[in-house]
Amino acid sequence: MKYISTRGNAPVLTFEEAMLTGLARDGGLYVPESIPKMSSADIIGLAGLSYEEIALRVIQPFVGDSFSEAELISSISNAYAGFSHNARAPLVQLGANHHLLELFHGPTLAFKDFAMQLIGQLFQRALNRRGERVTIVGATSGDTGSAAIEAFKGLDTADIFILFPNGKISDVQRRQMTTPVETNVHAIAVEGTFDTCQAMLKDMFNDFEFRDGVRLAGVNSINWARVLAQVVYYFSSAVALGAPHREVSFTVPTGNFGDIFAGYIAKRMGLPIDRLVIATNQNDILHRAITTGRYDTSIVEPTITPSMDIQVSSNFERALFDAYDRDGYAITRLMGELKQGGFGIEEEALLTLQKYFDSGRATEKETSRVIKSMFDSNGEVLCPHTAVGVKVANENLSRTPMITLATAHPAKFPDAVEASVGKRPVLPSWLADLFDRSERLTEMPNDLQLMKTLVRERIKI
Ligand SMILES: *Cc1c(COP(=O)(O)O)cnc(C)c1O
Image 1 (cartoon, rainbow, N blue to C red):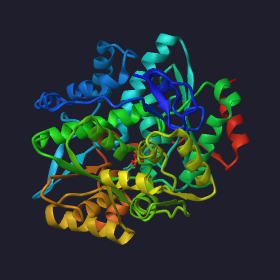
Image 2 (cartoon, rainbow, N blue to C red):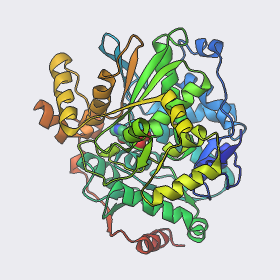
Image 3 (tube, rainbow, N blue to C red):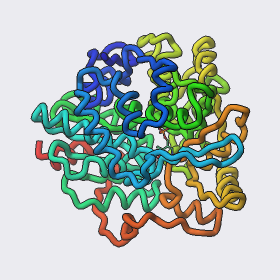
Image 4 (tube, rainbow, N blue to C red):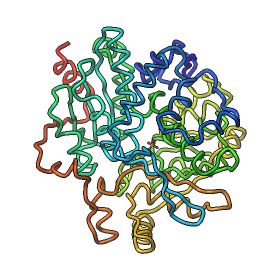
């Protein structure tokens, strides 16, 4: 399997190379040259398998010969061994035709663990084999960073630097990044928003001298291997509810479009998905794009769903690439226009996107109201991001079973949950002493040069 860039002007890579690189050298995102298909019989064959066995069948066709079957089996097994639920991604029924897919039973209590734990394993294998060491730099709106640090801390093949917007993430999220004692972990609090951090990250990747000098590697949600790992739970949950004999729909709380893009890949592979519903908070660039065809950035407003406080949705480029019939020049042009503030999606491409995606948004009030009403009606305590999904899913219910992705554990966002239900969600026992551990972080202005100097000094290059 080969990987090509959405901007059509970067080297074609193997799965392993695309995973280790992250962002393509032309500024684009790597996508598989073609999408492997699973037949109805293949999908029927997933019934009754464990999460790990389903993962192997879904992931293997995309990996080609980058990893042997035995390597994949062992990496998948190690990745999910630390999850606190045997089903890994259990379904819980919310209403007659509405299910929650709980994706928060990993070590940092958000769905990011599904991908990050697996790529931690795959990075280590690949780098050990090559005898190489890399510098991982990531930007986070909160959950990516903690999941990445958890997956890479203590590895001797990588240093990991995580940039997060100072003061704009929850205390639990920050502490998960600042309390690990391993010296290869570097938590950096940047003055600005998530988009500031993401722009800095992109600039570091686009400075090839720096990029090659420090052997930069990216594990943000633009990393194809992360998207791929997330495809698995679309299959496991749909099969549990009767696929391929019965279609299902998904509602996905979205910021960077990574998680829902994994659902799109599942559908392209042949999983019978009826609707894929994008759920945004009031930072609703994706909802506006799907409904109006204008992809225009605006100011990021901080919300109680910080992991979705994003106005430049990186993975959307992958969906655009397909909607524009994989025309890298068209995507390069659009991304140029985005730098000036936005672009209009061509009519035909917009129709293609609307064929796959519906969308909705939730205001702060609506999100709190859903947390309260779910708690009052069936005792279910939702994290605010999940509540955005449930609000939008409720507007899209039909005869097809709806699966809403529960993206984080409520205890990761205790203030917002307590404000809605009057009760503070408790952390699982293994994180109970999080607030007693000491923190270690570096504060930084929005200054690219200073950031590069810091990275070089820390890794001594
Ligand atoms: C990252 C995250 C999201 C958004 O996911 P994307 O892949 O960026 O769309 C939603 N909810 C939570 C809790 C997250 O951590």
